[in-house]
Length: 240
Image (cartoon, rainbow, N blue to C red):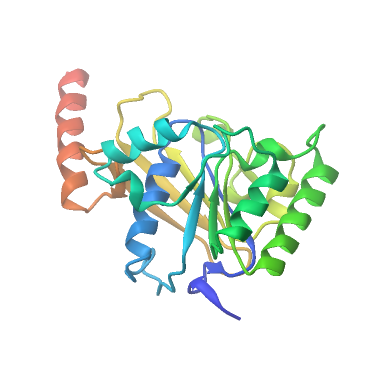
């Protein structure tokens, strides 16, 4: 068995990255993958980088570029498929992934391509098809999907069950990464929690925070600590 990241990202599978809109899931993943492609460890696991592509299926390329520039990333550094701009369907996106010979595809708005009524049978069929595609063209998919904004007491205990829609998302995908705000009622709160839930093996949770450039980093990162300390001061003053 081979991996893109030991233990948590096996090749030729569909993995999910979930979280409510605005949680910072894409910002976390893009920054982490740029370090991964340099051979740095991914969540303390050994990396095996390969050529990869970003499928912009929920925003324009201009929007992607603004996000990257804000994060201090040169837009040309990430190969991008303009799926939103060109109105591509899933077959056209799959063709583009195959033609550019990417061994990893980060696919935004992945769940929006599931046929209606987007229930269990449709999700199962869709994920089965995508996993077969991964095997046929020697690639791996990290699919970006949505999960609802919910208070802690409203959430399923198992992170694999917290993806929006049918339970099949958790049943028929491999590793699930989930980024959630620590306080859904305070948008300015920089804290996030990353849950990692492999299909086989123990899960983990990691505390993250935004830095001044909007990158989502482990809270102990010096650049994230600047924002965390500023938030703590403001929150403490507000409580008084």
